[in-house]
Amino acid sequence: MQTGLRGRDLISTQDWSIEELETLMTVAFDLKLKRALGEPHPYLRDKVLAMLFFFSSTRTRASFEAGMAQLGGHAQFIESQTTQISHGDTATEIGEILGRYNDGLAIRQCDWQIGNEYIRAVAEASRSPVFNMQCDVYHPFQILADWMTIREKFGHDLRGCTINISWAYAASYQKPISVPQSLILLMTRLGMNVRLTHPPEYQLMPAIMQQAQENCAEHGGNLAVLDDFDAGFEGADVVYPKSWGALLTTQEDAESARIGQQYSDWIADERRLALAHKNAIYMHCLPADRGIEVTDGVLDGPQSVVFDEAENRLHVQKAALALTMG
Ligand code: CP
Image (cartoon, rainbow, N blue to C red; front, side, top):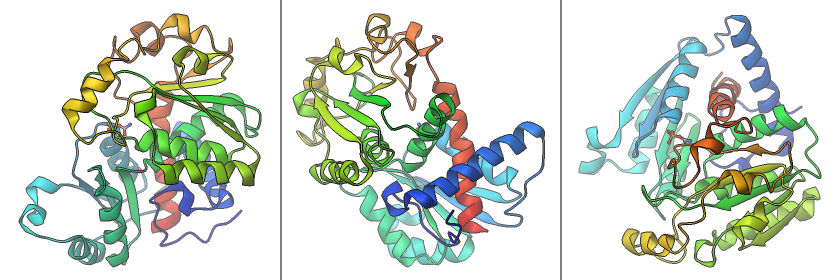
C-alpha cells in the first residue's frame, strides 16, 4: 500500500500508480462505512478546499462540498463568471493566490483544448494540491466512483469482466469526451475486457487510445473498438452507454448535433440491455437525456446502479482529499 500521497495533484488517474489508486479505494470504502455507522472522521479539520467552476454541476459540486464538511473542513464555491478571471486573472495567478488561501484547489474547466491545459497551469503555480473536477480530456473522480461501484458489484478482481463503453444519442448538448476517455484509461489498467462502441464520427483522442492500448499491454486487459450499438451490449457485464460530442470531427456544436441526429436510434433500451449478461449492470454518470439517451425503464430499472455511482463520488473524493490535503 502506497500512502505517501500528501500534496499530490489528481488531474488524471494515469498520474497515480495502481497501488496508489488502491490506497485511495481502501480509504473510500472505509469512509463509506464510517458514514454509514455515523462515526465522525474529521481528518481535514480547519482545512479549506476552493472549488472553481467554469461550468455548471449538480453531483460534483454537492459531493465535494458535503465531503469537505464531513471531513471537518470547509469548501468555498467559486464560479469563474463572478471572479476577475474574465477580466484577466491568469491560471498562474489563480494557482499562486488560491493555492496560498486554501489547502486544496479543485477545478472544472471543460472548454475543448483549453480545460486540461488550464488545470495543469494552475497546478504548476499552486503550492496546494490541485484536483480535476472535469476537464476536456479527463473526469477522474467520476471514473474512480465508477470503479468503486463496479467493485461493489463484481468484487476486486475484474480481470475477465467485460465493460461496454458506448456512445448513445442525446439532444441536450454536445457533452465532453472526458468520461469515455477516463473510463478506457482506468478500466484497461484493471485488466478488464474493454469495448469502446461508437459511430465513426465519435472517435476519442489518438493519444488516449494509444495510452489505453499501452495499459492493456501492461495489465493484461484488451481494448476492442466497435461501431455496432447492439453488438456492444452482447454478453457484457457492465454497460455504460452515454453521449459525447463529435469533437474530433468538428468543433461546431450545430454540426456535431447534425451528425448525432443520424444516430438518434442509439438509445439504451430494454431490448438492448437484454443482450447483455443477465446480471449486467447499467451505468451512467448523469445527467442523462431521458427517453432519448436511455429509456426510463432502463435508467430506473433493477439493473441500473446510477445512484450508487453518484453516491460513490462522495466517498472517493473524500478519500483523495484526506490522503492529499491532510
Ligand atoms: N457526473 C457529473 O459530473 O455530474 P455533474 O455534472 O452534475 O457534476
